[in-house]
Image (cartoon, rainbow, N blue to C red; front, side, top):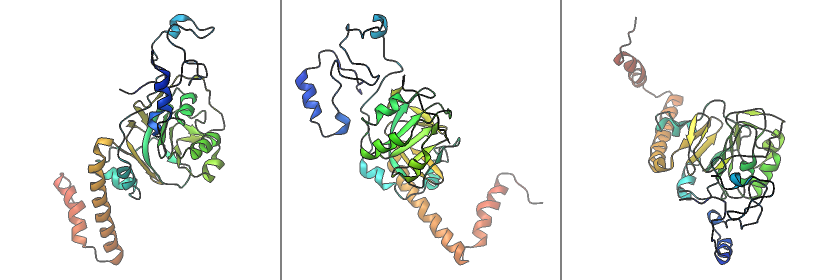
Length: 287
């Protein structure tokens, strides 16, 4: 089971020290008791209340404030194999059911391919989205479910610059972004619903690497996202290998058919059979 960011009781100092030396970003050390935490406060062992915080809240469950650092990931070569395949072709091979809609659009012309690192936050607050930048791996796409609210920009120039420094793969926001000039001049793809100059709050709550909804699609941590000018398609991790082969064949067949059309050699009878024939088989009638 994935770990939260809170230090488990009894964690040995040497174990934490060893965790710090792990090169894998998915094995980051758990914050020590007393270190600064996601909420801007400190992580203390059970029974040690934060000053001014009621004891019952300190001991309560972390529902709504859970951050899972680790999850099942697709192989990097499988993710990269989707690069260059249009989102529309992949979407066609998933029965046209996996493409985002509801106004999710690109704010620059950079293609998006990567593994989803999901964040769920309340409307107008990006505390946990900011924290996620330190736990995502290079190439990860930060998917922020901000409940579709577009009043406040959830990603801006500062977050973009830090994500670029860490080698992340881009942002997809079910909400608004800001600092459009920085986004358009940046090196990472950014998708969202709208632009707003109004900044977010940073109070929480929020959760990391839980199921989220973005553009009408459920996105799980570890899913593969492919985005271009048309939009974004969500590729469930378990279906990725099968969808890759289907999308490659779909793209090849489509390109061959288009080449024949442009050359004037595509059989009209084939087009009639594909579309008029289908209309008639479904009960249609030519009058």
